Image: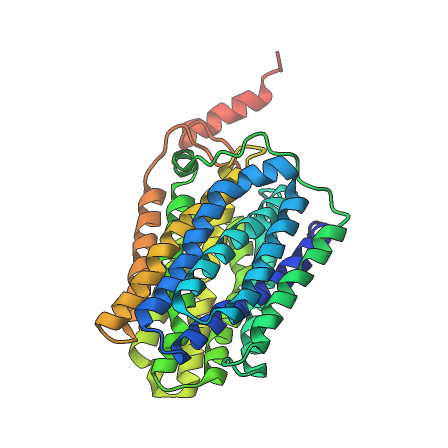
Length: 411
């Protein structure tokens, strides 16, 4: 395990710096937009613009990687994302911000795809859950730090936007200087969503469902905390509590998913996360500790689900399909996120701020039900790499046949 992690240490370091910048930027824009008087629906549209760019990035970045390679694509996209962060200072208005969020989403789709496909090529089915859990812990820890940086300067100023740009630019250094072998060149840049669903229905549906729910949380939870009367410090603490919970539970859940059918872990985590979401909707306003405690539980069970869905899909993916699988999952996540970010804003506008968490709970209950149905459904002709092939159901006759096969001489 240590050898597997050390082989991707530079990638993890780059991911940490990159996601710290993106986490700060996402929360900063929600808070700054509210301070500028943007309607809640417009703030939701800004988040949707990011994920619209994310979708387009998932569609076209594989061709870029195929043409110039992983490292050059990463350098180009990070430079674009860094410049976009600075441009927010020049045009403090909803329309140009939407364009900039679209550009940032496109860039981060490619950056994430490069990192995740590279890491997946270094993992095996026996340790994929643990390796991806370490990656997610780095991701979540970085986003926690990024959210914490919101408190070091006033969101009304320009300093935090400059800091975002600096972090994204520095993330280039570990990737450019890494000694880790680059992934094999792509044979094809085509994303086949239908084939992805055939290979891993739970992985595909889980990616879309987590996008529907999580984008609403990342985009609108800061607004929710602000609407119930808190300032920047509590917003940062609330978001950080969710991420800390996810970071602490990510590795144990990933390790558990390496030992049992990953779909059982998806079901359990989804249901527990839905329960935490209901608690947030019902009792979060009681006190500061209640708000932060339920946020911790929410993050602990909700946020790891996407990583386990990715591991499940990659278990069943063909060799050499890391970029196609990662790109397909990110595309589905992006499509769900475009809808989810706007849906979260609309339900808050139509009802009350706490309705955001009822919406998220419904999505995760639906994912749990779908996963249970897939577990109960016997698929013919599709056998996961993670499991040993057994030609027939276990029975006394099966044991007899196996015993005879072991005692018969080989041909």
